[in-house]
Image 1 (cartoon, helix red, strand yellow):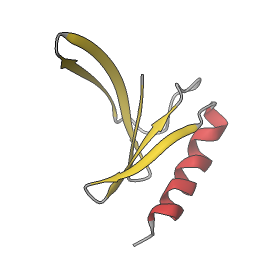
Image 2 (cartoon, rainbow, N blue to C red; image 1 turned 90 degrees about the vertical axis):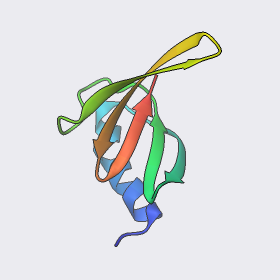
Image 3 (cartoon, rainbow, N blue to C red; image 1 turned 180 degrees about the vertical axis):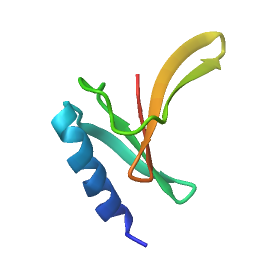
Length: 75
C-alpha cells in the first residue's frame, strides 16, 4: 500500500495539467482528503458530486471528486 506522500504526488501529477493546485491535505479515514483550487479542465473519471453544508443558517456548497483513491474538494 503506498504511503500518503506517494498518493498525494500521484494526484498532483493528475491535476496540475488541469490548472489545479493543492491547498491543503489531511488524512481522513485512511484516505487523503485534499483541498484544491477550482479546476479549469474536467478531472479524470466520472465521480464528481456536490456537497451542501448548512451551519447556523449559513449555506456553503462544495464540489468533490475521487482521483487516485483520494477525495478532492473545492468551492
